[in-house]
Length: 368
Ligand SMILES: [Mg+2]
Image 1 (cartoon, protein in one colour):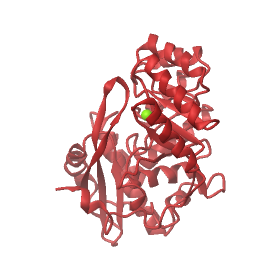
Image 2 (tube, helix red, strand yellow):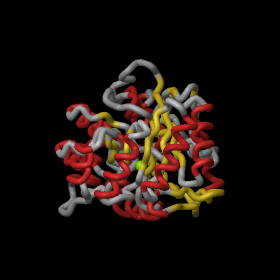
Image 3 (cartoon, helix red, strand yellow):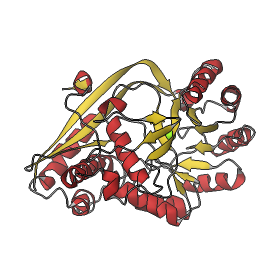
């Protein structure tokens, strides 16, 4: 089997209301870049790269990687990963090149699953806990008035989720108003808090002390991803566990976080950190450092599927990030409808990732 073509499909969804996070930042669009790998066996693989703008994924995938991939055997996933990321004289160690390669890698695993007529998680080692399901948390609550956020949080718990994540990071008083309201609304459910790199060291400590009072499950990205030492110091001072990793890349990047004792919940993003190939290795590395992996995943159904297959086959993972914002390119992309019950999401069982672009809602949001 040979690769015959590698293309990208760009989509953009205009949101009815903006998604607000720390430091006053918000967005009113969500865009994505799918990678489509064709073969001479009639098998098509779908992947997704997250991080750079979709047009950048297109330039890197179609301009740089496609010429290296066409004519190659798509089942040689490790070799092709190296051809994209480690064979050059000057390496693309972090950032957009790795994100774009992630999309290709995911598509190659989709091809492998379809070729072997197995869901991808079974090629990665099978269902590690044997349950056929992953426990999910509701993602996410975005910045709004405290009562609005609390109502939404309660709605997620009513839908059966036992954990809810919220974005904060606009000062200790404003954050506390919202944490208090949400905690009041969700009772004993787990509450994760995400600062999206919103604080400096001093404020991160002040806010962390406040979060301890509300039994917060994890404190996500309180600091800049560059400040690994600061994160390790903060972790040593606080009782609330630290989560980080959506801005980190490859097993080598995560090794730095683990060696620094900077993280309790590692959050590699499959669509950014190097694809399924690399995500599996990061999960294994985390296991060796006794760190729990809770992969970052806030994107389309293609990314969700890739994340689910890796998590299913990786023993040291916990909490599937599950988009509860009614994003139209989420569960609609699965070839068999996604079963979600009491916050548990059943593993996709169709060959490959179990997603498709053709005949779905993708055309409605496609950017030509
Ligand atoms: Mg986050």
